[in-house]
Image (cartoon, rainbow, N blue to C red):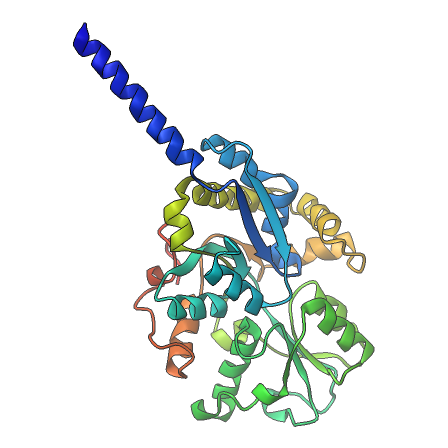
Length: 333
């Protein structure tokens, strides 16, 4: 009898310790994103309260989620390093830069969206990368560190030789996609070229004389992950249930989108307050063969190897698994 009471008491203590460990996790999760339909999985997570749902299932009821909108990766990078942000949806180059800068403490939870980026211009004299001159201004989310900036360097390295990878950097200006689109459409502040993304590209290509120069798929030689969801090892270690809840919420959001893209497109227009895109156009964008919402990364390692070669990062990762937490790399590259 005394042995049985001891076992029961021990179980109560262990249960209390486990409950305390769960309660010790964060009560608020902050997730940052930028602008565009490519961030649709996060919009679904926000609208359907999927993080809260999965957190509750993991013993974290009452968790709140703050959704931050930022213009480019610089703010996200600082936020992740300081701990002000717990997760950030950003381009592969930002992930790679942070992974190198923090000695592998910041990695990707998973891929988010695979889609092409479009280098579009309204300058009739620019047909290829080699045709740009000092008269042109190329809008990218953040100079030197955004995905678009790195893609431009890769294209320049191919066109002008590896040592001249930065040849077009002086032409770049930092603008959020909405601001870059307004500048492009209105032909203001000298911006005649934008390394764009959907749905902004679809608006810009309709401008008389606007034409496509190249895409990230062409530069990288195939479909490439444009967005990943990053976090820190510190957050993951201290908040394993919250971390898994976000991963499960992202996975469910992607399933929801892929099962009904029309409904997902309606949700995008509502959450993004996008009054310039028609529903059918958004459905067509995310249903295109080159567009995919998936957890599996592609061409991320190739981007990292290029960045190591030009000295943007100190050391190239040995494999895709170096850049991703165990939840996320899968069979990707």
